[in-house]
Structure formats: structure tokens, C-alpha cells
Image (cartoon, rainbow, N blue to C red; front, side):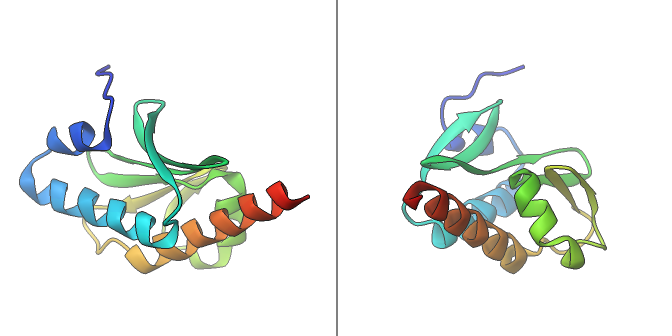
Length: 119
């Protein structure tokens, strides 16, 4: 396993067409979580704001998006077309990536973390 230190390093390892997808995911997350800091966690790109908000990773046939179990549960009704597990969503590379859904899930996680910090 390669130990990346930045999201730029992570994205750079992929072919140009996949870099475009990963870059757009990154920008989508930044727009939904403008105060979040980037980091690498579990060898994946992650966004941190008080705690880890979301992660993403490119696999052979899908984009893995990891918004924790709360993020998956909150959007369960909209995720029926995708393979999910407790804290993960698989967006097939053979279909358009739902960037708007990624943005809304990320915004949910920001709000969730902010509420917990206020308590």
C-alpha cells in the first residue's frame, strides 16, 4: 500500500480521465464543506472539520464514497440504485457520478458535526 501524504499525490496516480472525476469530487466536497481541511486517512482522501466528514477512493469499477454510517442512513431513500454498506456507497464508474448527491451528503455531515460540537 502506498502512503500518500496529499490528495494531489493520490489523484496523480490515476489516468487523466479518472483524475477529472476525482478532481470534481474533491471540488464538490470543498464547495459543500468550505471550512474542511484535506488530509489522507486510511490511505484515502478525507475531509476533516472537527472530525472526519467524508472520504473517497477510486476502485477498479466504482468510486467509493464514505460519509460514515449516519451519512448513508440519512440518504438511504436516494441510494437505492447504488451498492451500500454501513458507512460506504459505491458509485459505478459506468454511470454518471452523482456530484449533487455527494454535495448534499457532505453538507449533511458538516451540519451534523457542527451540531455535535455546539452541545
